[in-house]
View 1 (cartoon, rainbow, N blue to C red):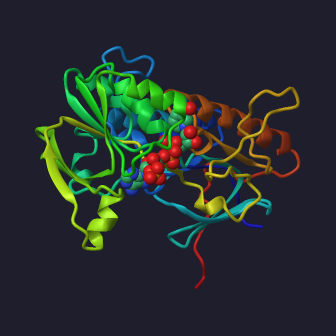
View 2: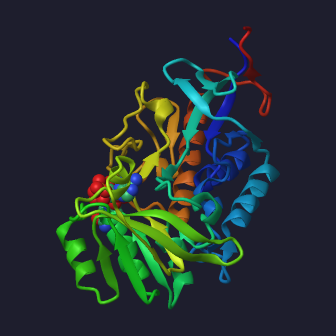
Length: 347
Ligand code: NAP
């Protein structure tokens, strides 16, 4: 059997980095696969003001860079790569990367995160992090006195709108239909709030502004029967209006990055999030129910989705993985820590 690593961490956002620091300090020489979005969601935000220990805030990118340096200092290594398929019932676990490489590892820590869905409006890639955001908790406080839009109609959109209304002068919820998907109690709170209003049967077509000036406006399309973008594509006439706003927040749901786990024994919930187990006493763990596979961060958390909680569960998962590896170390000695174990297919 070819050499195997002790631990591969899939994902290099806050959860993966926190896990890497803990695992590296435990001499597991973890390999971190950085994924398609190295650094994860924090790299899409500007300043982070609610992460403990930074009273003046810290840039999302800087926080990630510091975490990476911290993990590397203790012996973690990083490699570009995305897991395409995983064989979890083999020992060691086998991971097939999109590059064609195969990596073998005794334990896998899944910290692949969840990606906020994007609307597809013009200019969104340029303005993400510059007035366009997918996280009101992260960026809402920068919008004191501003007029902002929230796109979506579920609980997330309403929660974002209520949070933003603490800072912004006005919050307009832009929803593509005439009724909300959000729970009644949340919807009522938003309707009763003086600063929050609704644009029904409306979608966001374009965002205006620049990285230097931030968001300065948005083009909205409306149709009395809803789903205006679809109807515009069919050639049906829609109303089009440009509004002055200084912030746009997307809240149309998240997609957990678990495609490579769908054909494995790892349990996923109805939305694709990894389900982690509780122990015999009912306490939370980072175990997935599949031997040697652990999960941390947003990939297993549709509820809190905060950088600080991702860091916390990352450390938990590393500790669980360490205990697992240690418990098996007499059964199956691993290769020397840090030995490269990547193989390429012969053809
Ligand atoms: P969601 O319930 O799936 O709602 C997504 C919303 O975005 C829907 O209203 C949908 O419109 C709209 N949407 C989707 N794609 C769109 C597009 N391309 N353009 C414009 N609009 C689009 O997602 P969520 O609000 O993130 O909630 C996810 C889960 O977490 C839910 O179960 C929710 O109850 C839960 N959650 C709970 C709380 C809480 O209890 N405090 C807070 C947040 C989330 P349509 O309605 O037309 O499909």
